[in-house]
Length: 289
Image (cartoon, rainbow, N blue to C red):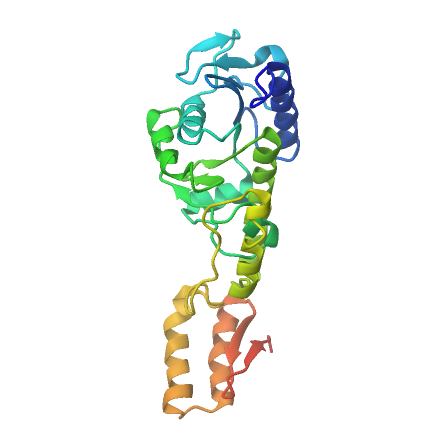
């Protein structure tokens, strides 16, 4: 047995266990998703096509070489095998890959929005920035080509209009990264529902970033947006904010009371809570009347 890789028995057990967990957590539905574990320089085990990840058995799994040749198994391998093979080829340190359709993360993938803001400490350390790979037809070589540029620098990836994929040095790590990704997406959605685009101060991000080398984590880290990006007002109102800001701070012709009325009016249209800046430069919450 090569100590650099898990044994066949260990790899198959890990795939079945992770498959059950992602199915039970609702990260896949029906026969969605696929998982794989590399067991040698030119060998990996992968899930079969058309099977629920919560109902797989060991005899269903398929062993392949890195060029896609079937070495063991009677089932047809997953239609997304090309994507798994490409990740292993691009990043030799990877030992496991998990592809799923977690609802919150897939919503960001469908919207074409990366998860790149520091809003959750675990995500800053464990994931960093999660970009969006451009859409490609399922099962095609184009899917493999679309993920290739991200395999070295990143640990998780959103697939436009499709789902998400994570990888790691073990199945446990790849699986945990998928759960962390879904948690990050869910928290981000909740923040946006509250009408808040608050992110960690850059000083906290740098402190968390300093923990990553000790845990063997590299790659792009989330960054707090510059002033004006991710500001806690809907984009449709940014022009109104700039106008009011200019009148209040540059021309100094508006009083704080009038400034508040502008944002109370904006708030009434959206039903959300927002902030304004008073004439002393203090941030205040606008509350419903």
